[in-house]
Amino acid sequence: MSRTPFEVVAAVDIGATKTTVAVVPLPVVTWTARSPDGSVRVRTAPTDRDPDVALATVVSAVRAGLADLGPAGVVLRAVGCAAPGPLDPELGVVIHSPNLGWRDVPVGPSLGDALGVPWSLDDDANLGALGEAILGAGRGARTVAYLTVSSGIGGGIVRDGVRLVGDHALAGEIGHLDAGIGGTDVPRCSCGRRGHIEAYAGGVCLAARAARRWPRGRLSDGRAAPRDADAILRAARHESEVRPLARDAETALATAIGAFAAVLDPGVVVVGGAIALAHPALTRRAAAIAARRAIPETAASLRVVHAMLGAECVLAGSALMAAAVAADPSHHQRRSKVKGVRHA
Ligand SMILES: [Zn+2]
Image (cartoon, rainbow, N blue to C red; front, side, top):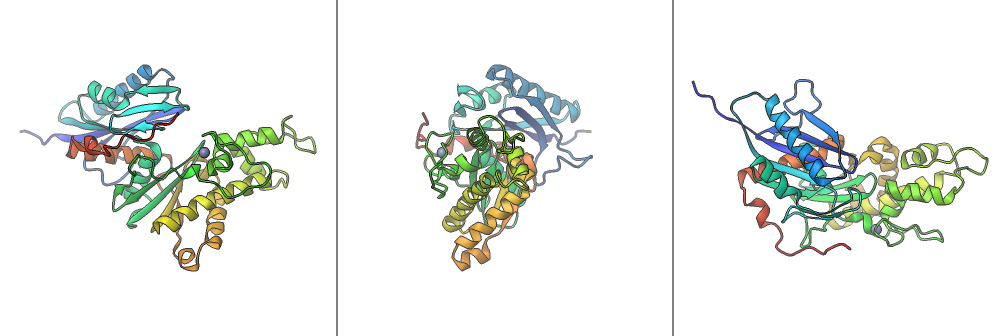
């Protein structure tokens, strides 16, 4: 008796500190990673600074995931991978990732060759947007804007189930828009310019701001000053001296939400990323500020919600891209033919 081959894709999310891998049955119609009997199981490992070691770890995790599903009849059709940018999705290369310490790493082709399947590589914010739009909080909306608030600020746009990447793969780079705060202490952004949304609301920049404000690590009354974004946002609830940093972060994120609302008229703005998910008040206040600033029609229709898939929305997006590549292996080669603006 012959059985129908069980087709799967591999989904990979390479993050600055950890890498997650899942083997996902086709078609990808739901994300069940958290259900105890779910068909998607996620493996996590620290991301090695050496790309060869990191990619070998991914390949082993995919093979282990395939072995979990049984010895026979499982066919891996494609691998989809997310990584922090800047990257070239057409060539599958991480161009330069300061967070990973990688430069010119051919992640897509390496994984594709090792596993013997077609590949896809994309920016983590774009894939988070895709995951939430199709399998998460954006379901039912035609236009979904996604904002991620973690060590940096990222964004992605999905229209009718398709990512809008722009002519240079830079669409949705909302973190590097001026926050509109001004004043005398305009913080420097991770990109080098000053006053960007990320400079006020990105975790790395927020921590740097606190270090500058309290150089000896003490508040004016001598108690310990908060040092990271999580501690800053917790302390801001009851410390008036810390509150302005959180208020600036809210104002900066309101600019991001307002820009998405004005330009895209989205059905929903989905906010994800570790910092936003741990501090729901940040999103709530930012959404309220954005609504107050907008024209009444936009304010009335503005819907801002948290990512439903949590941190796994990126992995879900990778699985969806892998499924698209499995259906059409030339998919990634037909992306934007314009070579993107290269970051320094
Ligand atoms: Zn910037």
